[in-house]
Length: 232
Ligand SMILES: [Fe+2]
Image (cartoon, rainbow, N blue to C red):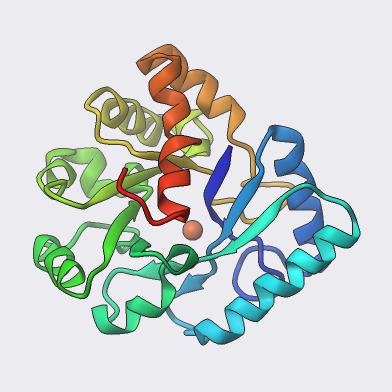
């Protein structure tokens, strides 16, 4: 499996606090069957340079190699949707056109279609992160579904699907899955203790809802297309 959303870089954001914690997270992911992890630090209040983040990825890969943890870390970011689209271009996943974008926790803005269109004009393909946790989407999933025209994709959080973000987020995740409006399941992991980098439980559940083949696409085929810059 490939996890396209994980706060595994040490000491950068509210994810892994240090390299030991990054190592623990990578070991948990490896044991769960994850082979590649896109490191996606928040690019929001603190805007680290892309060069700096890429160096952090290289450093972490060196540590994992030395410790023989069979996981490769790739470059990416969890980019705030309201940043200027031309600035977002530096934070695409593995230097492809795909980018994780995070809307405000409370709502999807009324001008979201315009925001997404401006990203497309910059050559970006946005992947909307965890909409199932956004109250206005929970209240009216149509606000999300209406945005999924053209090259706009959706990532839900594994923990939402298994109920760790409460029944409303879980119900919304299941609803979006059944609607065919989910393209990725990712961990959005922040530590080795809570919000862990585990996908298997969510994939098992997704298999029961949409079938094995479609569920595996969300953690294998689609993420592979993203990190190699191919169409989904
Ligand atoms: Fe995140």
